[in-house]
Each structure stands twice: as structure tokens, then as C-alpha cells.
Amino acid sequence: MTAVANLTEPLQMVFAMKVNTIAKMYQQDVNNQGQDYPVVLQQYGSQELQEAMQLEQDYFDKEQVSCHIGYDVLWSSQDPDYAQDKKFSVTTTGLVQVSLAQGNDVYYELSCDSIDNKAACQVADVILDEDGTSLISWYRY
Image (cartoon, rainbow, N blue to C red):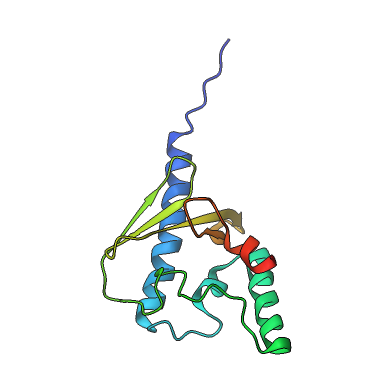
């Protein structure tokens, strides 16, 4: 006897959940013109991402010097165009890719769980460049 599992449908559901989470995050940022506090990325972030972002904030509070990236990570820009078109997709490695009209791509690693029959995804990390530099490693550096 041979058992064959069809993973396509569950995998597509997970990909859809991930894309929907990122699309919702971007829509919230558009609606509030990036003025959320805590920032929208932190609201959608996993515990580990939130802790890394808090490390950066604590350092700034103590030293009055920022070690942050210097641009809005969601929009890959210092002066985001909230009205620009965005395209959401999933890479072969399972990252959510946001292709921005300005020509930049932003990649998100998400973790998804089902709690009390409700599926939820959180941003585990943001890949900042083609070398694979992650936001968490940047903040912890």
C-alpha cells in the first residue's frame, strides 16, 4: 500500500494567509499614512521581531543615537508614496514578496499558527537586501 499526500491545497491556504496578512498590514499603513504607534510592522510582528525592535528603541532612549535603518522598511523609502501600486506574491522559499511601483522589492518571512480554530500569521522577519540581511539581525547587531 502506498499513501500519497496532496500538500498543494494546504500549502496554497498558508500562502494565501501570509499574503493576506501582509496586504492587510500595508493597507493599515496606507490608511494611517505611517503614523501608527507602535509602528505597523511591530503590531504585525512576532514576539522575536518585537523584541528586536524594542532593543533598538531602548538603545535610542539611552544613547539618543539611533542605530535604525534610516528608511521606512515597508516602503523601502525615506519618503514613502503610500498611493503607489504594490504586487504581492510568494517566493519559492515561502517568503512574501512585495513589489513596489518604485522598483524595489521587500521580502517578509511569516510564521502562521492556528489557535482556537483561527489561523493567524505574524511577521517573523524582513529581508532587507539581496544578500539576505534580516531586520532582526540588523537590530541585534
